[in-house]
Image (tube, rainbow, N blue to C red; front, top):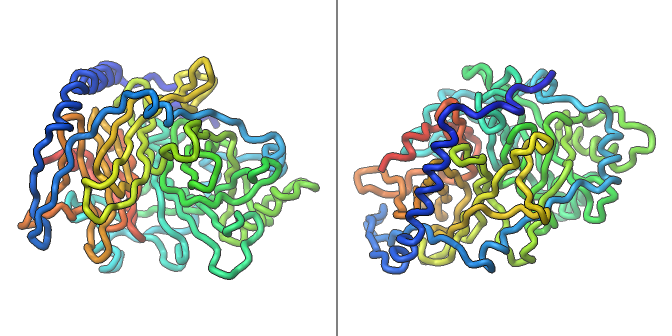
Length: 455
């Protein structure tokens, strides 16, 4: 079945909106460079009545040395790994995966007090669901993306879908399982059938990656801190130990894993990865079709959090790197914010735009003093940055920034900024519903984008 919207014409007004957003950045860039250097420090009372310095607005990066380090190169999956993937059998689509969704998320009313306590204080979640502890024990929640990213009508085919990534490492002292990395890491994605808001069901899909020499397949060993589903492609971040910065998967080429996959004779490593998926309760497996590598060297900023921005023309991938949370607050360290444009070539659906030299270049880039970012969203020239809580502080913070100013979402009688979910993760805007999805510990939740934009 052909998926809806793969070559959909954008809704009326998208171009004008994107042009206005771009103009806003261009007109304020010079002013921002002055205001960033002359910014006065505003003070916000914290929960303990201590003052906290507010960082200035993001600073545009224009030097070639700064933007050149963000450049990507696109690499197809090595032929040997591609042949191993094909040996797993005929591919299936998202609909076939959802048809086998046999696990259920609990609605907010059935979440435990501990799970509800991890949800944002402000803005409050309008929808929330909780995972089964037994099903996710030993796994760490990561990025979220939805069919609202995949297609601007919010559906993939006839289905509304949420994808939730989880990762784990092998227990200390235990030999890694077959198909895993040397450290025993694995990553999987829950494909959630969200057609009925009262009953969200899901099943697991294992993420695979080529071995370093390209001759084998293994389980993806990186924590999935960023993930975007755009058209028929799923873009997933990779860890620092991996040569790739992003892996690209085709959601129309999901394969069955485990005993039911019946891998072809001689498929070798592909069969082992499939067996490993079965051992980890995954019914399906996704193998990459391509990857993106940074050309700026080992010290170049790496994509850590990503999200889709449909308010630009063309649509773009919003990116931030990970700068550790400094003990001295936001004024310690620099976080880079940048974006890559998606290709408008109908022969390259869901891939990033490359220039004549084959490079993917950052369309624009900024530097922010908000550190410890673990979730990024960009919409109409505003950046939203999720930041986890410090140890013992309960909730995290959500910062709203543009080229003129930076503000945290505040709440409570003392106007504290500790209002967001405690272990902040990725942000994903479902444009057709106006919701922003994220997850915190064992909870998956949504808040209205309009509530994030309020001062």
